[in-house]
Length: 162
Image 1 (tube, rainbow, N blue to C red):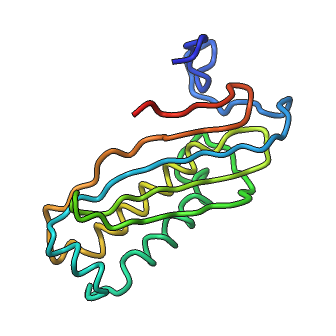
Image 2: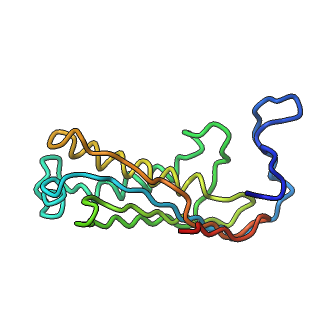
């Protein structure tokens, strides 16, 4: 929690508004988020072997996450549109879950951070995995979507304590 626990998107009248970032310096900002798609071992095997009926599950989810990060301001009402410098999505099958760990890293040089873009990328990538395998297993679930790290900006460095 920050030293100043006020909501930045609520004005003095209690109404939602977009934060004015025009006076802020454009600095390099990075955010990393993660999420998990939990499924049966048999469904995970289909994904890993490339036998899902809808095609390349992980490749499609990766592209969907990148596209989502770029369109975050169209999905989250008070987010600023940003010219992102880099978006990467790593999706790793994990037999221990069983399922997939999804991690997004987003970078920008701008006046505001990219936490929402990283979280949106992870969310949409996880939803895409679900969509592509739901015909095989309806009980798949998504969990643990969270911000792992953010760097840059006035509030400094944040790293999730595991």
